[in-house]
Length: 261
Image (cartoon, rainbow, N blue to C red; front, top):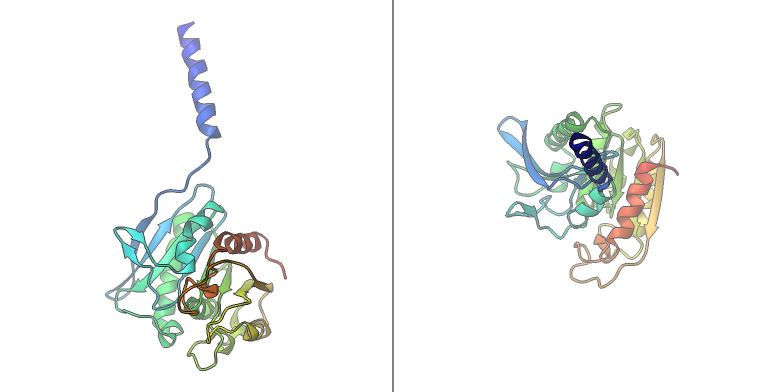
C-alpha cells in the first residue's frame, strides 16, 4: 500500500511539473572564432520548444552594450530581446568582431563582416537544428541585406528589415544594394513618423521594388508609440519604436510564423 501511495504521489508531482510553463534559459555570452585571430560574441537566449532562432543585428556602431554580463544598449532589438524570446524564439544578439570598434557602412557590406555573420549563423543552426531568421534595425539593415544577398539556398529562412537605411549617400544603404540577389522572404517594417534623415519613410518603397526574386515580400508602416526623445536617428525616438515595442515584436513574430505578401 505504501509503495502504491508513493507512486501516486510521484505521478501527481510529475503531472504538476509538466503543466508548468517553459521558461527561457538565462542569457549567456557566447564567443566564437570567425576569421583568423578574430572572434565575435553574441548574447544568446534559448527557449524550450522554440519555433526558430532570431539573429538580431543592431544599428549604430554595432555594439550591444554588454555590462556585468547583460546587454545594456537602448537599441530597439536589445530592449526587445525578452519579448522575442517570450514569443517562442531563440534569440542571438550579435555584437562587434574583436578587430573592429565600429561597424560603418563599408565594413557592413564587406566580405569580412559577411564571413563573421555566416560563422554565427552556422553556429546557431548547428546548436539547435532550427531555421534562422535575421532581423536588422537601422544600420543593421545594411548588414542583413548584405548577408541575405550572398546566402546559399537553405542557409537563411528569411530576413526582417526595421527602420532601414535608405539614403543613397550612405554607403550600403539598402535600396542601393543588389537586392535581386535576395531569394528568401523579406519583411520591411518602418515607423511612418521616422525622422531620421537617412531612413526616410517615403524611400522605403524602393526596397520592395528591388526585391525582384524574394519569394514573399511585404512592407508594413506602423504608427503609435509614446514619448519620443533625443536624436531622431537614435533608439528612443520613433526610429526605435519607442513605446510600442510589444506591438512591433508581435507584428514581426506573427509574420515570421506565416510569411505572406
